[in-house]
Image (cartoon, rainbow, N blue to C red; front, side, top):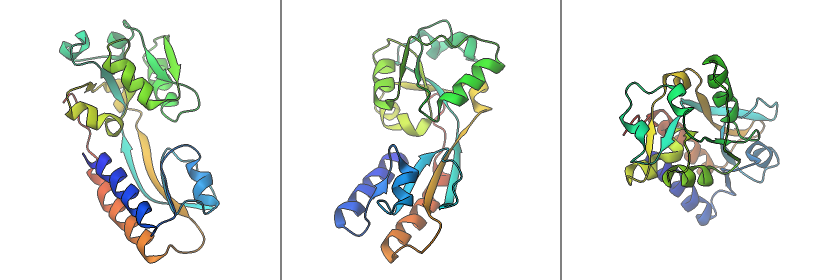
Length: 199
């Protein structure tokens, strides 16, 4: 999948020493602003006078469940269907939380989480084991979906509230040649991030 290729590409580039660091985790904006990282990939990065967004792509969240979960056979699937089961959701520190809260509010449903965490890996594990449903974007779960470990199910209520994956760089000063090449490659790749639907 493209997401895995992007991460592997950035890791290889960083190992070559041609780019200081590609910030992909927490404190992305800070790492880019301070020069610790040449570029960053961030969901919903807030505007900052010291940063420039060079590419952006919207992704919709979906329900993530084990392959044998009863919801895999419900068509059409609605948010109310998910509310019947234990929910594992991102905590307030994560950018996906407001989209989930807004969808539940607009659907007039209570958001009763069994589990709250700031770990995407933990959310995937809980869903994979069938202990709860979670809500993630298709990029975060692509490898697991392709391996048949989990399913990503489209929810109309969440399609209405996409989150943006943004590629950011410092606003001042240019990038060296190789990091600039990486930015251009990522700008070309991001529009190809397609929803995987109920694959």
